Amino acid sequence: MRLLASSALAVLAGVAAGVSFAPLHLVYLLPLAVAALTLLCMSAGAGVRRGFWLGFCFGTAFMLVLLPWLLVIGWYAWIPLSVVEGLFFGLAGLATAAVRRLPWWPLWAASSWILVEALRDRWPLGGFPWGRLGFAAEDTPLAPLFAYVGPAGVGFAMALLGTVLAWALLHARRHPLRAVAALVAACIVAGAAAVFPWTPPAPSDRVRVAAVQGNVPRIGLDAFTQRRVVLDNHVQATLNLAARIDAGKAPRPDLVVWPENSSDIDPYTDPVARQEIVRAVRAVGVPLLMGAVIGERVHEPWHNRAIVWSADGVPGAYYDKIHPVPFGEYVPFRSLLASRIPALDQIPTDMARGKRPGILQVGPAKVGVVMCFEVAYDGLVRDLVTHGARLIVVPTNNATYTGTGQLAQQFAMSRLRAVETGRFVVIASTNGISGIIGPTGEVLDRAPVRTQAVLERSVGLSTARTPAVRFETWVEWGLVAVAGCAALVGLLQRERRMGRR
Image (tube, rainbow, N blue to C red; front, side):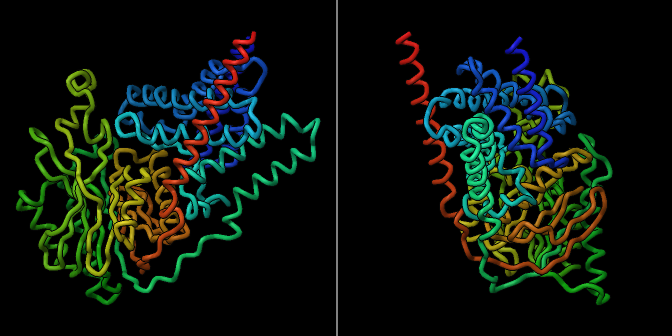
């Protein structure tokens, strides 16, 4: 009965963690959820096996609440992925139970969350970073900390608030002053960057960007069946912009951005698609960065590509997406699964991976490109800045998930990447959410979902590197090493105690 009650409480804590993220974004529940799981793993009789089970219950409930947008594909995507991700959180519960007798255990327990995130960010199938604690930090005092320590450091700060709260509750009766002092210290550490934010140098150059959201009439998996309409919508929105420019109602931008999959028709081989794109580019008279599917997708691998078109309508430099989405852009274990899951008919062949970072010269701007889900991966975003990107652009196609929390969750990640890199971030989506984000994470402009819109804004081009870009890798691996060593010491001490018994 005690295990059943503990399991139910762990599930409730996981639900609280899930609603801490967008779209509900009840973010102040997140440290409470971490504290609840920590207390359960610290309770009498909670050994490492029970800690693993409680962490698994927590993590599975957390993912089920966070990822219901996967029901667009089917329950066979939502439930198995949630269970697999729940196993990683089981490791956090195990590590927390293992370090319970060590001095300063709130530090070691908090670092175990970053160990778990480092694992699930990379494995299996290239990892799945959704639900990292730091990605809930937008519009909180922790958000400015992204510029100093990135997602791993912010995740540690968020977890530390929870583990210190758990310690304070355990010691409040016997040591009330120490409990209060520990909580105050944790809050100061977590919120210090809000008082002393990293201030990017004023950009020496500025460009005017127009981000086009063409709109997709249908949503869900039907979004893939409207290739010609989607392209026509983006062409027409750009022609409307050109007409306003010619009429003197809008200034001419320096570059135009279209979303990922704004042309699901290969413009290299389809003369009609190419003609329409060229017409739009020449009408607006500036370079265009647009997303297109290259290849016929039926019998051979294809590319998800961002192409730069010159102002006179000639395609030039391009970026091929590096990190394909499992079951979205390629099918793992295709021979086993494709015949059993009808939705996979939408992906008859696998996407070919790109091999180089998305650094493209678009008119006067050296642009760093990450496409759609790639914005969730630290290394891809960091590489753009280290290779000289002065502006971050996120072309994305979220039409499949219109009406779900996925749009708001990805938009929140993009906002936090702006803080982390100290760059303006331009998001162009087929159906939303499109937006222009300042380097402190503020939303400068945002288009309504499921509408045709063009966002126009002057943005700065930065060359400065934040501390996060310089040192984030060291922060993450340092916390991983601390967590691993602490868990190992705790397990060895446990084995010695068991041996003496």
